[in-house]
Length: 279
Image 1 (tube, rainbow, N blue to C red):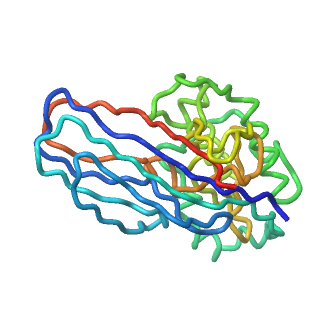
Image 2: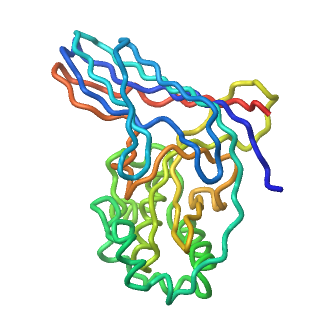
């Protein structure tokens, strides 16, 4: 039986303004939902200033919390709290290449095969097909390991707006950047691949109930008959320590918080993620 972790997650983010914003409209994608590999037992989003919240599930299956602040505010604080049980599903048998590249499959998953502005690599100087052979799982494993060797993990080396092409050239980045490059190469190989946003529980094992610093994280899911998760930043298949929040073509589809407002210049408060084991 695969490892199962009971986890609580607190995600805090927001904006501060150089003065007062008169109004703002925002969307937050910070709420995990039950699915393969996880079961959510409770979730809540709280907001300062306190205003009514609404939710919907977007096209890619991500829970979106929307809110409209129609009063002067110099700060916007969003906190999401979730209780979830997480485990790693076993890898399924992969489709043969001929089946994966069947026109019906390519048409169904066309949006996860097409490059986006974030995941376009016009010239990579290599043929990705030279990096791996065998079945789909073997190719993905080898490709992810190669990307890890090509791009050095370096916090602060890029901004949140970085593209795969920029990261490919600089050879430095964080999980978001490594994920974008991996998506670009998998799509060149006609493997449907999507961006996953979520949380990563740290490798050490503190006591049950102890809150520790977690990580806002990004990784990849590829389609081989079923969606399978792999973390190219850490060089592992998706584990019980990975908690999924949302999916999309790239980061722009799953940004944790975005909005429009009327008022002075805004700056992000950053992201603080805390996690604790419940069992």
